[in-house]
Image: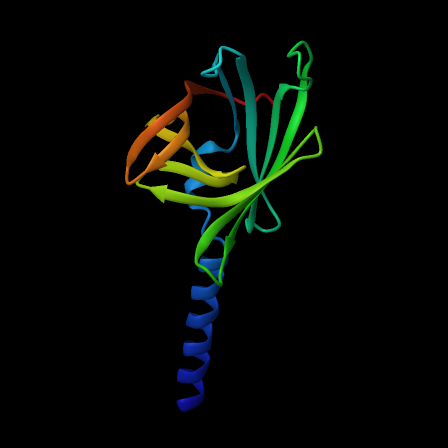
Length: 168
């Protein structure tokens, strides 16, 4: 009987740690869709992007593939970013890495507030936040700027991502 209790405890611990390793459930509603947004940055330059989210490696990471402008003149549109989101069991946070066509890497932390998803990262001397603010299952308001103490101090971009089911 004592052996059975030990096995049960070990089973519960392993199930608990597996759940923590794959704590990316906030991204489930984003998968299987193509998310598109258009708008203008604060300086007047165009913003146009489409993103596809998918789970990989037994649901332990989320992969993103984004299309956007691939030159500074904003005349070419194509594959622009590939990203990874992963739950870090040591810090109990979601980390992200975003690789771009220009050779850059943006990395930071994802915070979940209700159904909203906030990406926070260092950009030069500034901490920038990208917020996916939930509207409904196919719509998120998208904001980029300086976000401190639940308040936008400055907005660089404000637009909306709309989703369409992916065609097979």
